Amino acid sequence: MSDALMHGTTDPNKFAFLNPSYNMTFSNTDGVIGTLDFNGPEMVFTGKAEESAKVFFDFVAKCFAQRLAELEQDKKRLEYVMPIISGDDTPDANHRTHKIAAALTLGMEGRACIDGAMRKSDRRA
Image (tube, rainbow, N blue to C red; front, side, top):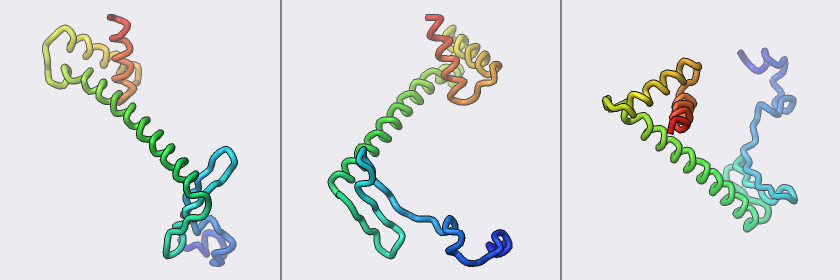
């Protein structure tokens, strides 16, 4: 369906949301301190470069730390299910299988299911 049919006009100025802005804005407690503008033929930065860089790298570091923590938890999950996946016939593998089954019965899925089974196993110890 054309924009004219959907909105009753083809004037792009009447619907500015149809033309997205590709900017990256850096802010601190004082407000906006810098902007990277990707809308033109060249990327343009305006603002305080050093302060903006600090905000950007603090954000990247926070994202990296969060992702690292998620990967550590995924590693623990994998270590928990490995005896089940590899078909070990041990009391520990059987116990974990029952805990996973109990979590599935409760309607849990994926990571939440393994986390629920791990929490139940921790209570046993």
